[in-house]
Image (cartoon, rainbow, N blue to C red; front, side, top):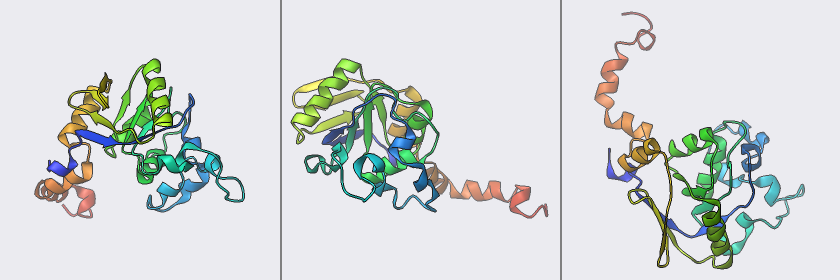
Length: 204
C-alpha cells in the first residue's frame, strides 16, 4: 500500500459531544439519506440539534467557534447505535472529524468508520470525562492519537486506549482503503474480471 493510505497518527484539537446512546439518526437525520453522493454530508452532522426549523443556529459544540477546525471527537457510551447507515461517519468525516475517542461504539458504526480511515478508539468513563472537560475548558489543547503506541497524548500526559487489532492493523497498513488496494492491483483485477461470466456477458 502507498504511504498516503496508512494512518498511524491523528493530531489536532478536539470537540466533545456528550450523551450516551447517540444514534445514527441524531448524527444525520434520515431525510438527508436521499443525497445521491456523499459530497454534501459535511453540512448535516447533528443538523436538527444544531439548527432550529428556521435554520437558525442553536447552541451546540459543533457550532461553537472555539471548536472550529477540531478534528478529534470525544463521545460517551454506545455512540453510533441505531441503523447501519454509512452516512453518519461520512457526515462526521466530511465535517472534519478524523478520529473519534469514546467509551464504546456500536459495532457497525465503528466498522464503517474504519472503512473510511477514521479510527474509533475507547477509553474508560473517567478518562473520557477528563478529556471532555479539557476540550471544553481549553479548546486550543492539541491531542495526538498514535495507533502504533495505542496512546493519546496531550501536553505532558499520555493515556492508553483500546482498539480492535483488526481495525488497528488495517489503518496502520493502509489496507482499510479498498479502492486504493484495487487500484494498486489493477492488473490482477483485470485478469480476474475477464474470467467472470457476468463481466463478459456470459460469452465465455
